[in-house]
Length: 352
Image (cartoon, rainbow, N blue to C red; front, side, top):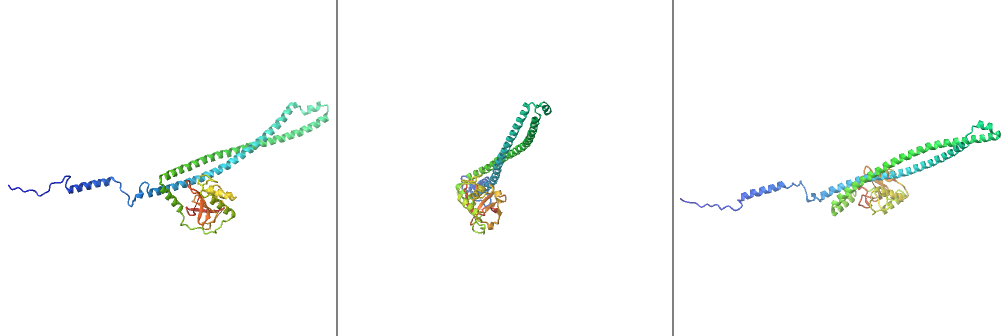
């Protein structure tokens, strides 16, 4: 029998090449199936701590600051009203106390007269005339007693009037006091809202790297640089406006503190109110009130000292100081500073 030697090479350990290719392909496919697919156009910046997440956090921080500023202005309005009501309550209570003292004096005078009549025995005038040894003298005394009675009647009328007035003033003081308590509750609620939003913003800021925080700050300060600069006259509209601008400039570098109105820290409306106060002019405490604190002019005609009101709800305010800039107290963690007038949507420009 003729035998033939096979020309095939012995199989290599681990299987043939086609088998290995099939196995490697299967492993790669399984690994791909277990790995989450990256979105089209994704970049390393989209991961945790990347640029995209930092931008999203920055947008959320801006929204929280905006909401906190709205709550701050509500707090300022409630605080202003609370202070006014406290004065009114004190005045009403003082009036009621003075009226009470008058009632007490009138009561004492009438009680003294009644006591004297009682001690005299209250003898009938006809009987006294019959028994007297000096009828003419008695008649003189009777006329005097009539006059005394008339005066006591007048005192009694005054007492009744004073009592009615006292009752009314006590009721007024009570209503003012009740409203004061409601305003104090509003004050507490707005304070809680501010603190809650600022705490959330601080937490998000702490999650950013120092570089991301710096970039966010640079971006926020660059907003509005491309906006048109007001073309109004270069000088302030009045001496008081010029003095207010000087005061606002002197506050640059001082910290933002919500609810503060100087002299060492400010919120947005606290700064502008303080600056005009230094100029000898009183304007409202809130940005909403300051929007109506004078004549409104177009942004294109803004002059130094004008109040620039931002957002449709007038929740932020700055002072125009010329050259397309405002001085304002921006948000917690920042200082009073210069920024472009178009840094956010302008809703009004008011000239006090």
